[in-house]
Image (cartoon, rainbow, N blue to C red; front, side, top):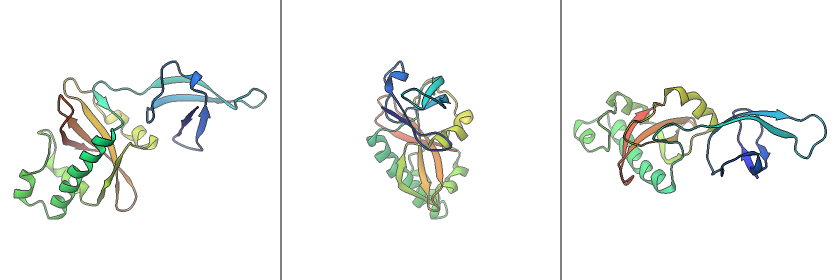
Length: 169
């Protein structure tokens, strides 16, 4: 059984046989669901489906990546909250392309809430995510102190052992 979290409404449960390829937890799909109004075993069927995949972009962090990202975001939060002290900024795990003006966006987050983004957030930022030609990037989300979701992007080293903060959406 595959349980889908739609952008709006209740979760939908479908048979995994509706999908040709194996479905992994936290995969994102663009779907058109047809609701059956009479008969049949299932009240839903998929009319159209495309897996959301962007070249060299990972949309679901592993547990290890989420753990590492939470430490990076904790450092960034403390630095940003401390009025962006220059000596602090030099020690942060930032990608060379990171715009330092975005540091202030991370001053009111809960760093240990790093995880997979909601469907609504992915739909919101999908057009802003650029495919990566060489370096793999990771998109994850973190909660702000007021409970809102904030998407952040990290660059991954070639062996995926090091994360660098790249962008805040």
